[in-house]
Image (tube, rainbow, N blue to C red; front, side):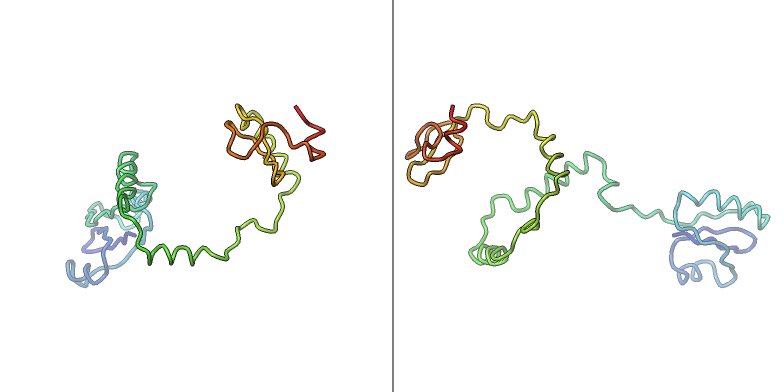
Length: 175
């Protein structure tokens, strides 16, 4: 934020406090404009020069560094990400921290619990999933004890290849 003052027939651009301005320039001034952004500063200075018929402009301000992720360059972002990833690297959590984390997570439901997707949303998700081959290289197998069916690349102990013969669904779509 910039303040434009009229002081001894010259325009002073200042962005510090009024107390500091009074200490530096004295008490003989008049505040003539207030500019919020530095991109609007030069047009307003030109307008004030015409309005107050003066050519003297004293630019006495400090440009403050803009903060925020959008003002970083790609190299700075990369450096910052690498520094943040190394802060906890190699440090195991204490038992107290593990206990607090587990207590904080227990009993909390997910954000979508109890809700269903609309038909339109399900269609959009189905269209996006087209072409993604999740089952490439996987074959049907089932657990004869529980009756559950899975798709696996390699056979795990206790499972048998193929569909479950006890299920109607397995009989309809057997390979």
